[in-house]
Every structure is written in structure tokens, then in C-alpha cells.
Image 1 (cartoon, rainbow, N blue to C red):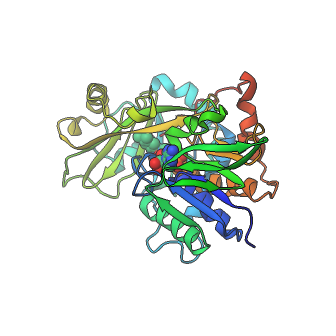
Image 2: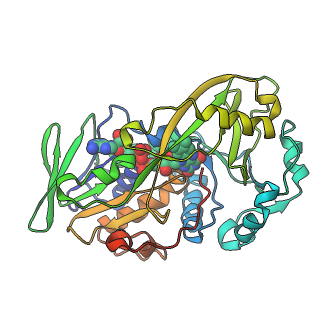
Image 3: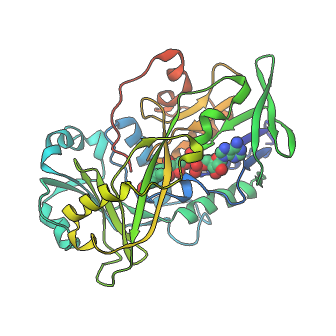
Amino acid sequence: MVGPRIVIVGAGIAGAATAYALARRGMEQVFLLDKEKQPGAHSTGRNAAILRTAIPDPVLHGMARESAAFYMDPPDGFSGPPLVNRTGLYLAAAPQAEVEFRKWIDREDCSMGGHEVPVSEIHERVPDLAPGLASAWSFPAEGVFDVHAILQGFLRGAREGGADLRLGCRVDGIREHNGKVEGVETGDGFLAADAVLVAAGGWARLLPGKTGLEIPLVPYRRHLLVTAPDPTLDPRGPAVWIAGDDYYFRPESGGMLMSACDTVAVEPEEGELSDPRILEDLAVKTRKWLPRMAEAGAAHFWAGMRTFAPDDRFVVGPDPRLEGLHWAAGLGGHGITCGAAVGNLAASWLAGDSPSHPLADSFLPRRLLGGVSAPNFGTLST
Ligand SMILES: Cc1cc2nc3c(=O)[nH]c(=O)nc-3n(C[C@H](O)[C@H](O)[C@H](O)COP(=O)(O)OP(=O)(O)OC[C@H]3O[C@@H](n4cnc5c(N)ncnc54)[C@H](O)[C@@H]3O)c2cc1C
């Protein structure tokens, strides 16, 4: 099957996973464009790489579980190395957050794959952790992604299926005629298309440009720090997320990767500029929970964008205002975890399958048009 001409704007996880899923459906006329010379140069290459499926919103938990099943057991030839290092993940609550934490973590439709454990279990695995946690859940099959292997697997599969990956190709706008997409204007000229998928991460809201068909997607900046290497740290240690203090950490490159979960709305061009003022908040949380690491010094410190719709749910599917305009954006802090499922769903819509996916309607852009907003579930995202 050749299929319609589809242009995907953005070769991060959303665009790459969609291109891959289209290739698996036999769609051959797919163009995957990215303004950068490297794929995954923005949020997909700047995150904490934690596989975490427990999410307070059951709809996102469903997507995360579906996606995790793909990463745990990808098709033959998708990747050489495993996509997930199953170090284990603990979600824990500080005392002030325990009531809120239990409201969702005890629900099977939010936390399948995990179980409650004594807090002492985390201390056995992370001897540096200070006392003070009220409760803890363990997700033994979860852990740390090899994001590079995932992205390369999607891109390789897409290219083998005929997709044309064009790097260093900036899309300046979408051209429409008579209520239908005609193609995109790029730095290299006009590229005709029957459908355009906006998978542009922090820039997604701006991409429809002159068409005026914005969706209220806002990028929020968050910082990560990796401490200097410490030979006493166990590199196979788990990822730990502390609700209430909004702090998470896991081993990385011989040191400890950590975040104070800062969340500041930004313009995309400023979304990756790190702000050293965050370091004080991170130091306070580190002194409280990992006191020995507080003086370790930083080997790396950087910022990235998590882009959200007002209800914290992804935006996936056709835009009812313009025939041929599709979205795969607003992946927030769950984009790597949920990427495989998002790509599959976006591809179903693009291929005109009328997805039978039980969650498909939950992500449609139409819910965000006309100022109606669904409840905010607070997704406690990485
Ligand atoms: C600090 C931090 C920690 C995180 N931790 C986790 C985690 O542990 N687990 C998890 O699952 N998720 C995590 N995330 C979330 C995850 O990184 C994102 O949800 C995901 O990477 C979003 O992917 P994307 O493809 O939508 O965006 P991106 O990866 O940003 O890709 C968008 C692409 O579009 C391109 N583009 C934009 N505009 C144009 C244009 N005009 N023309 C051409 N190309 C364009 C960009 O160059 C970019 O490559 C974290 C995010 C951050 C910032």
C-alpha cells in the first residue's frame, strides 16, 4: 500500500513513533522533518528516561501500560540492546502527601504492576536515603529507558518502510486551501501533503502559524542534575520518586540523577536555558533525602521542556477545523513512557483506520476547542 502523502513535523519520540507505526501499516509516502541536524535533540534527548506507568489519571495509565508492553517486548530486530533496564521503581509518599497519594495509588486502574512494600525495602536498596517516608510502592519491572535505542529503533523501522527522514529541515508554516491541508512551507521550499502531523514538542502550539489553528499547549521548563561520580553508589539502584516533596532520583553515569520537579511556563526558545536559581531548591531537597549526595558537586545540569494541554492529557488525532491537520503533542512528562502507544494511535488516525482503541476519544483535539476543559488529574509526571 502506498497511501496518502503524510508530513510529520518533529523527529522526537512522538514523530518517530508515529512514522514507525505508519511504516508498519504499509504507508510509504511519509516525510519526517526536523529542524535540527540530529533527531531527538530536544525533550526526547533531555529527559530523565524513567519508565513509570503509575499515573493518577487512569487514561494515561492505560497508555503507559500499552507502551511499556511494547518496550519490554519489542518486535524482532527493533533494537540490539534491551530498551529498558529493569532497575525497579519506587513511588513513595512523604507524610504530608500520604492521604492524597493513597487516593490514587490504591486504585488498580492507576497503578497496575505495582504493590505496597515496607519503606524499609527502599532503604535496603538505597542506603543513602534519609528516614521520613510514610509509605512506598514498588514497581519491580520498571526502571530506566535506553532512549537512544528506542528512538533509533523507531527511525530505522520507519526508514525501512519507506519514510523519508529530512534533518535540518525547518517547517515555517502549514499551507491550506478550501478547508484542507495542502502541505508545508519549509526552509527548502514547499512540500505537498494530504495530511500534516504536528509532533513539534514545545513548539507545537506555534506551528499552525498563519492558519491561526492553535491549541493551548504550554511548555514548562524542568531541570535535571547529575552529580559527580561516586564509586560507592550502586549503578543498578532503583529510581525513587517522592510524592509530597516532588523529588526524584536514580543512578546515572556513576553519579545520581535528580530533579526538584520545578515547573515554570516558558516560551519554547527559552525552554532549555538552565536557571541556576533552581539549584538552591534542589540542594534543600537533596540535603533532606540524600544528605550524603548534597556535597557531591554537579557533573551535568540542564533543562528541558514538558509540554502540556490544560487537562494534562495528550493531544492525538485529527483537528476538526482543518481537513488533514493532525496532532501528536502535549506529551508532558510521560512522553517516553507513552511514546509507543501515542505513535500507534496517531498513525491509526492518519491511516484513516477509525481507531478502535478504547482511549482514542480521550486525546482528540476537539475537547480543547471552545474553551471547555476537562478536570485536571494532576499527573505527578517526571
Ligand atoms: C526534565 C524532563 C524530564 C523528563 N523525564 C521523563 C521521564 O523520565 N520519562 C518519560 O516518559 N518522559 C519524561 N519526560 C517527558 C519527555 O521527554 C517528553 O514528553 C517527550 O520527549 C516529548 O517528545 P516530543 O516528540 O513531543 O517532543 P520533542 O522531543 O521536543 O520533539 C519535537 C521535535 O520537533 C522539532 N521541531 C519543532 N518545531 C519544528 C519546526 N518548525 N520544523 C521542524 N521541526 C520542528 C524539534 O526540533 C524536536 O526535535 C521528561 C521531560 C523533561 C523535560
